[in-house]
Length: 302
Image (cartoon, rainbow, N blue to C red; front, side):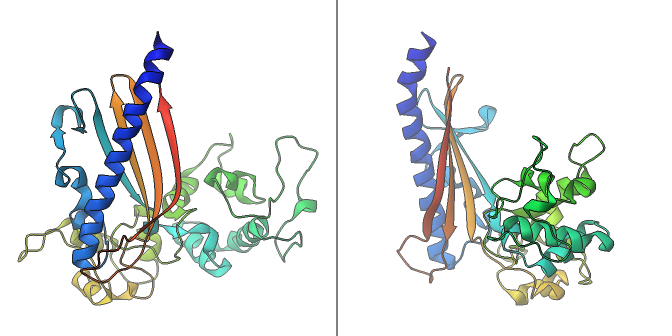
């Protein structure tokens, strides 16, 4: 029976996924111990499972856990984006303009966003609180007075639909750009330059005189002396890409990392989505740099 097969395979799949996570964290921690910081997957830990001793199966684009189980791991550096919930109104306004929003719209957008996530029901100038929303419309929403938990919430914030949705209520290009530039779980308003998304990089170079292509080209190149991929380790490294103007706008290390490990056996799979904070440690430290912030799982039965 399908149900029986699903129930019998889940424990093994979960063990494989959690083992892959533990192996991955151990490899990244080793890089942290050597370098004193985690900069980006290009630092060397993109292939963490291979470094941990797992066999890579090219035709499956996955690693072998046992004769029946394949595992995979994916990374998303949340700190390569702007922390949307943490941005000041002025910083949010700058981000919106950099992405292409008209300056005439930013005051109302920023005020309404601030009122949406603040803890009170007092509307700010150009803002909107519960009395400014249509509570009789079953498709409408009212300010929850808490930080955004899902990016799609912006479609309900007053003034946002007109800017970020098309005439059919679907996300437009500005919506996609903003979604690519921000994170709801990042902690810093200074994105990690080493992992900045295209939209975040577009915003970072706005009015800085920096060439985004020069930054990308530098990060995609290999150090001619060491043979290792280029990374920006500190502000002085920015001069290598003529990006000195970004010194006060960026960070250089991973602070909040999402690791997705998936184990699959035939049509069945178990996915573990883990969000970890990464602390800065001194080179040679043996303490773990990771703290699990949240973890969710998803099971697809056979």
